[in-house]
Image (cartoon, rainbow, N blue to C red):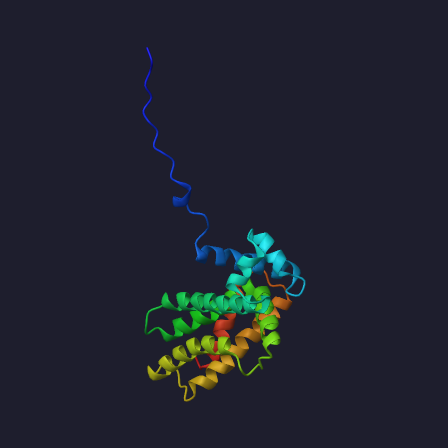
Amino acid sequence: MTTLRPAMPDAAPASARPRTKPAEIRLDELMAAAEQLFLDKGVEATTVSDITTLAGVAKGTFYHYFPSKQEMLAALAARYTSRFLASLEAAVDLCMPHDWEGRLRAWVQANVATYLRTWRLHDIVYTSHRRSLGIEPADNPDKNAILAQLDAILAGGAAAGAWPLPQPRLAALMIYSAVHGVTDDAIAAQLQDSSAFAADVADACLRMLGR
């Protein structure tokens, strides 16, 4: 007796199968490959071919997204800033809306921790990108975006009477510079555990405000 097997469904036609990854995934893979190579080899030593080889795409795919390596650097810098800002915002959002001392402490500690964790990428994308464009230190939209977060906390606290602060913007500039300055020192000292250090920095900043 012949055993009848159930008919198998036809395979999907080739035209119906996805041939390429979605554009956003391909872009993320390109940027991840570039980031890894820039960290491993440096920007100057990394070629477009290196990036596309690691990402597993044709060189033409790179130029579909970026006119040049410098444009990719600019995109990496923008992504770095976006993620940095998001990490600070997430930390601050864990505090109660009117806990101004807690919000400032969270902002400072998240800033220190994030900077210590990502300083190599920070230096690569900012130093190389800004040098290639001839951007002066005073003309820094990324710094201004981070300062705006801090300024909002200081101004909100001043308005609520949490601290006497007639010039929140001036205080924001001083705290921003202090936080990054002492974190650079910690990087030079190869600090391994940032938690206690970040808390000490936050305490120092609050003392600057008379808290």
